[in-house]
Image 1 (cartoon, rainbow over the protein chains, first blue to last red):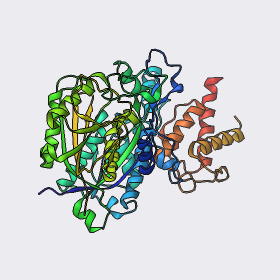
Image 2 (image 1 turned 90 degrees about the vertical axis):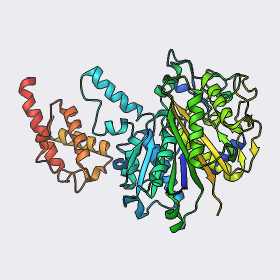
Image 3 (image 1 turned 30 degrees about the vertical axis):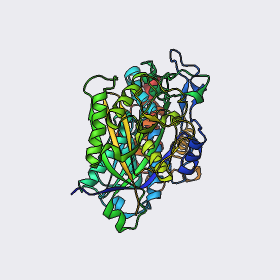
Image 4 (image 1 turned 45 degrees about the vertical axis):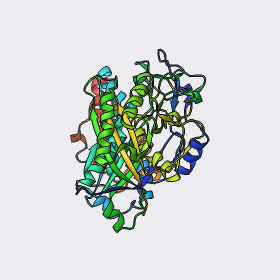
Length: 410
Length: 87
């Protein structure tokens, strides 16, 4: 029998703040984290000027030079988010962290942009002047995972999940599997992303960014017929996953249970989503959770507000659940936080499930007729008593993930 | 550069690079025990010395280095070796 896996801590840094009461209030007020990036005014041939930067945050004094020298912004946010989650779990100074029984699954699209540039300059300038002892550790794709391990003295397995927009959701899924299989008792799982002109440029080159530059709060518009692309965001969110018996033995407060995970790949096209594999991954997660589609009360959509992505996702969701499934996209508030979105959406949807209120997709006023029929939550959100929800994410290169969480009730 | 200049430049560099208390950076201060610099910091310090002197520096140049004064002497030697070529 696989071990049951529960969530015992959550924490993060986001565009709308760094704790649930604050973020929840902003979701209820329909506040968007998107703003115009005047910092990019001088950039030519880029269409969008929108982004959703993380809200300002302060680091405590123990974030010393020596402990942060190997961290760029993405690793720093990932580490701080993990600290908040460990505090929430009551595990910050627990011996289990250094016992080998605690591991890390963490991801991002890549390491820090400034350090990627430093290596680029080596090729251009033909000297090593731009690189110091830690440039690589800040640049590498698993910079978050490694820095979390160093900062908290964690000695178990590290599962890097650098899979772009599914980095955070894969981290939760693979962390869950590591505990289910009895390989670890505790896993620090999540994803981070730092905003850079590069991550925005990726999508702008594909004409996939929103150009509502003069009306930042009106974009992105997931599933809306007037949507014109995504807005890139940033942040980091960590979930502490724990074997149920371990959590109960230490009297931990249990927040939710991870009951299902599925992941697959399209094997078809770098950017065109495939309805069949998207629906397939949702069915995988349901099978993993041993649940019928009817057991799911809400779906947290990937919903990036791209032209093709929303259409494909809605049809895949409708194929699995039919037209009555309540669904919304948190990206309408936070933009697309890429590596962070999977864990960000898991965190906030768990909180919404506990409050029995689910946020609407803001800016969704007229559902695109090309999108499948679903119960799109709009307006002031929805009071829903839900035992299970599903959270879906889809990444570049055709990587799909689906997670199912259960509300915890003792 | 006079020995005084070398020490001051080195001190300013170390203070800035490693966020040290200027009072602690004396010629006698031991890099590891007193200033809490480790092997990774040593790499970055050597990179800085390379920048400051314009000389190619290897780990062998720093094998016997324990104190700030030792670093100062290495810099002085590197600069002295460089001078004939510069002249």
